[in-house]
Length: 333
Image (cartoon, rainbow, N blue to C red; front, side, top):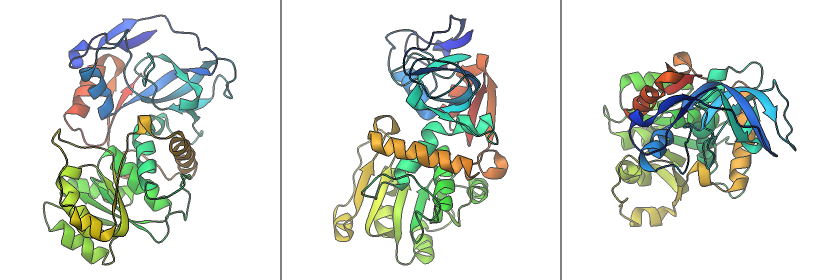
């Protein structure tokens, strides 16, 4: 089978297209015939930062059909599925034709959902779900009405996680505000379903958000805490939560403490790979329900443009994500 592998850390040039023998699934494993692989920032960061112990196939997310199953697996050959965290502590990522993945990272995909959507779920959608539940004492799957009466601020609504957060929060009944950096990204955020869009380069973001939500927002889904800490403290309601899932700088996070103390605000930092098992399980169930309801969508008309590459150009796909491609980068396997 065709597969992309790398055996040393480095730039996209370390990725090689090879012909390798597919592995047989063991107990609790599923072999998936990958149709589409989705590329995330953590894919190129993992490739560039650490030498693998053995040849590694990259990419965490994907979609396709079950090819074979090991013992104790509740799936059958031919089932349509989406895959998440395929390459996490596993040699088989989704940039190959047949990937063997732990069964708990393989989720049924409804017939009405495209493989493009399936490949775009995984890390972004699960991250968004965990972030939206960050202020809740018990991890429960999102569902219609679960966030009714709440106001959510999504920083960077044109990104993959931001897009998923807008769609999931709106589906669950929240009022959704998002910040963007251009009119083009504002159009994408509106297409995703944001109720209010603030272009922080064109207006005073804090003043605009306060006009929209004079009592404050309940939760911030935060992509850039270093830049937005002061804004978040200003617009959050008392007892609100900031759920941080990314940063664009290696610099330490510094902020004035008293504004956060005065409102009893909470910071929650999260990484989906190491999130508590109960939160991740709830996120899988919530995302699965949202997909079944048609609440998660992809494509320019849905606010998430797709950029495609063939398998042999996986290096170019990684470079596109590293360079900040808007929307979702997919690989046709």
